[in-house]
Image (cartoon, rainbow over all chains, first blue to last red):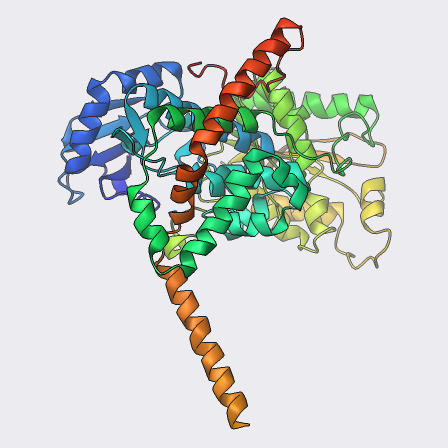
Length: 465
Length: 75
């Protein structure tokens, strides 16, 4: 049996460390944290939250599973594995909002059960399909009468501020959050806020006043710090603070910034329905044969083909797209139809890197892979033509994602490619079917291919096993 | 010229001092003071708001809450 490997992103809390072994996830719990966890479990709150589905499934196991790792934990926990780890800078507005509400709900339940959370990091929320789940069982501490909400600033920076950025200004949080892994500083948001927004007590307090009090604290030689040490928050006010934030956040919507490029793609597509049907048949046949436990839909758009994949043998789909409008529609589709489909933000030409402490705390999207199949429809030309990435490089990147998949090649005469080239010189003499096929054949076997449109779009089913 | 140099040095030192003060201050200080200042007001506003939602409910103007609000949370 293999030796458990420590997760490089799990180091902030000295009370615990995550390990992976044979595809299973374990948590070593050390010293004082073991006592706190025992109190949490004995209170019945652990089981209640797990039953409710808001906390990751957790059970104690024999410490021998972590043998030879060099740690000597007080106890070892086994957690149900989250199918795909995602980060807040990959979530759409709706996903971030769902995660924020889950965090508040967990805190409200905890407080009512006599516990509080030691922090409010968004990285403690993960998604199972669209269902958010809280994954850090060591965040729960016995509530002490009068204690303040220690995670308030972090909650603002990692949940509230990114949501307000989109809701008030129409600016998606993803690029900012990816560059600033602790979230969006309240001081920054406060600088952007027009005065009239302060007519809302929520904005006035959580944004403007918080930023002002922090900047005062920087200049007042420790007066604020001395005061902060004495602050008491009555439990009722603590709970109502959480409830009022939940009420505020549940009403937030992305500011309508007009139709994004692909938002109405599914209805207003350049294919006629016969072509769409042909593509769906092709994807369905592929999924029926491969039956992937996890399929990645690259350029998932509103999730049309993800849905087809799920109804023809794929157990779960992780979708990626760079268009915020399409991601919202994909979310709405998955929610309405209860699909095991998680549509995430990702720019194919600049995928999430290894970053954070030691460039290892948050992992690159590619190293988080676990797909048995990949589908990339109407995608490659965005990289090969739109972003000047050499065609063999695009094929190589897609084939590496999974052992089998479907890639659509869009020929140069296709209206969408012509649109991409409308205002620029055609510097792509090597963008040809022959070059695409050569690149694919040198990396995988072509199982099947089918021309699906009059403009000559071709679907290729590849297998490199 | 000398005056300019001195001014530039002072400005640089001041900038460093400010950075240091900023770097050693707990980033949550403002958040904690805020909780002392506004929690009771926020709490009262919340109670009034809940009555308002109830009142609207009576007149059939239900509170339009998003379906993503984790309705499973304890109410």
